[in-house]
Image (cartoon, rainbow, N blue to C red):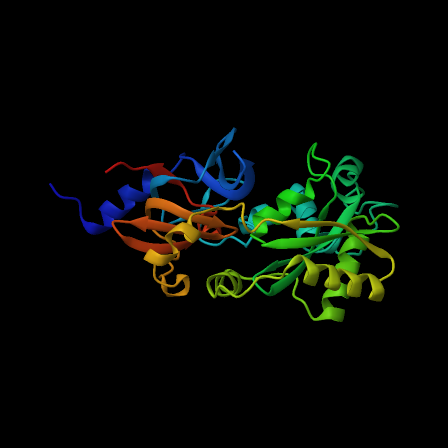
Length: 311
């Protein structure tokens, strides 16, 4: 007997319960190429896998909270459901992603007293030195902050910049080391002073990258750094990083065979991902399937369960 459409859909979704859930993406160097990895979890199991080459994934239509891993109709941009947003551990991480102390209802000075009353967390995430970066995709700029050291890497901030998909970036240190709260405050001041955003949407990055506008060269970046140091003498240029030639992409060799990147359609929240990955840069991933090209947004995969599918 054939299942009704409703029962069939219910059955299709039920197979995802308890499956692996995509929680986020991160970029790392692999054989000299900047490569995207998907972070996946299943109960207490956790791993990464490289998101390159041929891929055939069937994705759940429903979203799962990346904290409690339960199917939820509403999750925030971080991937948490309403109840998980209230958990102390998640409120602490919200301080890093938004504003120190906001999730605890006051302004926090982690160097003196942590509002969360968790000194271990404060020592690890709030008190360490932060850097301020100015990154760009094409000619579109963005300010941001990240810790000077991430994990055991002396230049751990580099991985945060890779995830953003920047062509290159300027990194500044404070003459007096910046903690989380002071870095966030200065980041806001810089953004307002130079009229540069603190965040870029997928659409902003898509337009900036696919328009193929000329990128900022090293000389232009040094000039920008001098302007910032002149206006904010408490900051000093610490690093200038260029990534544009290192991402996982084959567009230069295929340029003559492909239509303009901007005219290639974007598939938002696709139920199936199938094809060969030609390019990966920040949120943007370009697929080729049976001579059909399409983009996906890696953020659309957050909180979705999946299973491998073969032709």
